[in-house]
Image (cartoon, rainbow, N blue to C red; front, side, top):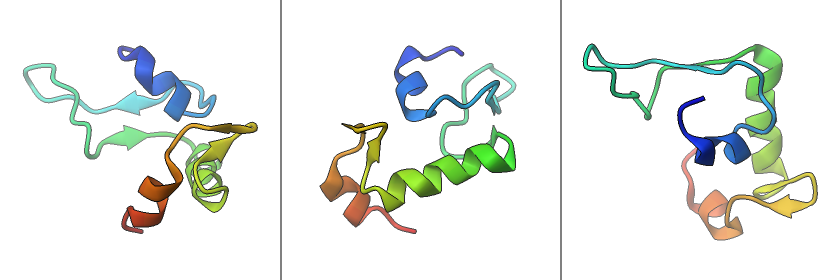
Length: 68
């Protein structure tokens, strides 16, 4: 994985693939390929108001304001 800061957000997801532009720039807003079981972890993170394994990894206010 190119970005260490994403490791925490990716919730232990194995082998995520993120699309890149022809220039090699990560797309960021879309293009993430993961297994169905792994994408469900993002849903669980929202159900837990940004908490994962007992730690707050997303601010509660950000989760509340984020579009669904």
